[in-house]
Image (tube, rainbow, N blue to C red; front, side):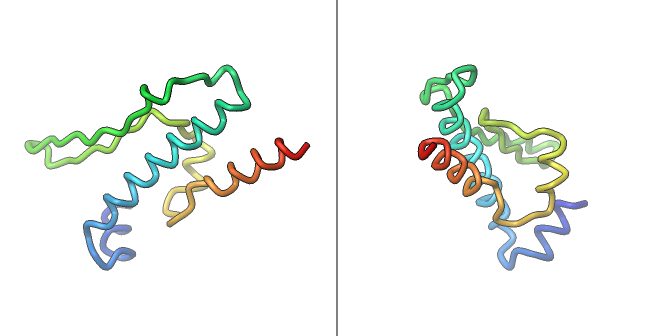
Length: 101
């Protein structure tokens, strides 16, 4: 229901939501790459990072998956229904601050 509300109420073009989901997945990959620079426990090969689109015609679903940084429950609660806020800008600022220190 939330997705339906978002698609019909916020986006003038109904296909734009898919671009937003793919953009969010890309941001998750970028965050993992950036965090892995300062956190060795997150070491990952860039070649292993991916976004996949899975179509289930019978169920009439399209699933966007990524193996990026992930979200905690608190992240999800904070960001659900928020447009154009993936936290990437905040992540870049944190990295810049740590490099300046």
